[in-house]
Structures are given as structure tokens and as C-alpha cells.
Image (cartoon, rainbow, N blue to C red; front, side, top):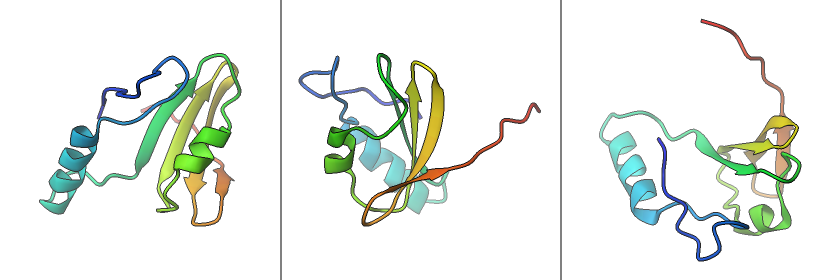
Length: 92
């Protein structure tokens, strides 16, 4: 689900609209789609978790898709740190 970036400096940081996040979790509890993770971009950087990403991470095990200037990487937000995940793009 798309959500607004409500951070006061959206050009350099991101913060998911809290109401959109609450709504997504509420929908999941009511039988809707599972919240498996989050996505954002580093348009001028690499698709690796930044220091800010690491500081803001909750360690909830969800997946972070980060798009950078040279592609996308998936990361799992584990309690102690991010772990890179492998993935395969398939056409359907």
C-alpha cells in the first residue's frame, strides 16, 4: 500500500504516515493482507540501510525493500541488525 512520507525533511528522510500504518495493521488483524514489510528509496545512494534506517528499525522481522540508484535490495529487520535477503524476479 502506498503511504505518504510525513517526515519534516522528506528529501533526506522518511517516516511512514502513522495513520496509514495503523490502518494497515488493523486491516491485517481483520483478515486483510499481511504487513510483510516496508519500502522506500535512496535515489542518490545505495540500496543499503542507512544509519537513520538502522536507528529507526524496530527489529520486528519485517522486510525492507530499499531502492537505490543501482537497483533494489531486500533486508530483514532482525532484532540486532538488518540481514540481506536474496530474491528472484519472475514474470507472471
